[in-house]
Length: 429
Image 1 (spheres, rainbow, N blue to C red):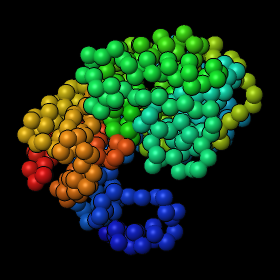
Image 2 (image 1 turned 90 degrees about the vertical axis):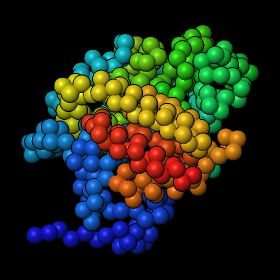
Image 3 (image 1 turned 45 degrees about the horizontal axis):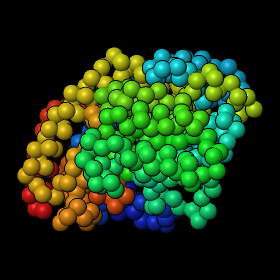
Image 4 (image 1 turned 90 degrees about the horizontal axis):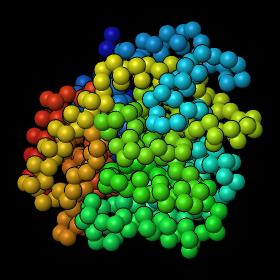
């Protein structure tokens, strides 16, 4: 019997009546998505879409991946939930695996349900270890929806509260395309890092526990620091006894061509957060730190669903799938192909200001005139691509950056289709 769907119009009616208004959606004419199959999504009319957004870097291993689902379903049938008060095996097996795949001496994990929780927990852990209560955060960063995570977010549209937490100091990000110092990318003295040190000296009370930063600022516009940035930044922070928290919620688990994006910069953070792709659709988040830092976090704590057997099993299955199918290498190879295609389009279409990113996390900033954000044009391009069966993301402070974050199981032929269709759409601008 054929399944009947509400359809997009009725869903919009119910959404407008029953959901809190902050829940928004892409597109003037959004489809109702009903099914996923690896790199493809299908709507209620049976139309197939190539997914180039991956649920915002969540579905690295593909939609409804049977290798992962079979293991998750088996675990659900056996034991679904108990809380961490009781002993279960998947949570410790996942923690052990993370201690192996994360860089350096990161070893001890705390599991929760979301990236927001992970960042909140990491910031708390830093305060407990250092005994200090201030934080540094980057302009254009996004770290979550909880109060503290939102307070260290440097994008106005994502800070939906009138009273952010105090004692947070924002410093410039390494946004080379719009460098406030007018330097050429990679040919500078990292003046943005020098500003970090100036802020530490002149704008704080000398009680900074940690600085939090995404390796690549996803919602900020796929802002990708130049090589050497994090090394210089870490040296500054260490001089003042400040911990470095690296947020890998969007960039982790093969997305950039390495298991974690910070590995491109040859820096080991003091604390690292993760979520999204670790569960491949199962809700899970975590932060991981060293023995030394973890030892102070001894007060009783728990996340009711954090590290539950189902989510932990999903995480283990994800790590197995990434390693068995060499998804890091695949992201590097396909990312190079996608980047080359986008760079060729940049030569043809003046609306493309910059192509940036690593692996299969790429951004295309759209501009008009002298670097003015092409905001309406971005929306029109997304709509046109959707009609052609391609789903992209958008981000950036002005929402003028096309975001390419597909499942890492995407094929070369899918990339060729994207470049061809995007070329045709851009020809109208």
